Image (cartoon, rainbow, N blue to C red; front, side):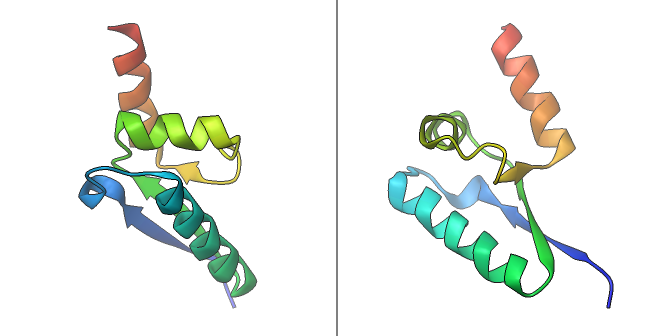
Length: 76
């Protein structure tokens, strides 16, 4: 069976907190056990900061288009 990816659109997370990051990590663990990967899309600055603060940016993968948008934000 092939590896598939589940994309999570984070746009609906209006005020993400550590519970949001915890839920995303639990989702990733569950899907990883099922042989699937998770990719986060539309991470806002607050969620990105929380993911970095917790130190799980290598675990919670962001979509390539999301990374490009984040780099543009950092340059501004």
